[in-house]
Length: 235
Image (cartoon, rainbow, N blue to C red):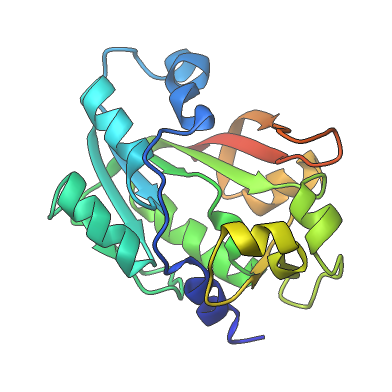
């Protein structure tokens, strides 16, 4: 299982179109951040796993945030640099280290949307330590984690957690998905979260401020995208 990071990187290092800001990023400021951070504060913000940069581009253009991003996908970072800024987006090593420093900056806010659950328990721990070190005193984090109510767990996973805390997910079993999406591989590994107690345990390095979730179903009640949300603060 030491190769899981290579597998996940291969799964994501591909061309895809993601031009629009996601709903969980679009509503973040008004629903949560404004309750804890002065509304007129211009934040220095880092997105871990920025993809093609649509969410960060929204924060920069709408709120004038000083935005930075990192990702393990070379193709995604290429798009970010072309679309937004050459110097504020970086390709990073998939293997987390607690000593990682992505930019010579300290951030008011670190966000990671639908990314951290691709790390094993140990790698997640090291990544959170590194992100905590990149925060200013009393800085904030907002993370999402895939729950076991998600369709990936219910329909596409082995439902068995290995010693690293990961569960294999194979989207290739869905013939319609294979026709719509052309991937080099269709399986990868996810660190699912069962409940709020487990969520708090995973993020115990931070002071919890708000625990929530989001969900959507475009097909039927059995197919959904359940994710937990965690707003926290540096202790």
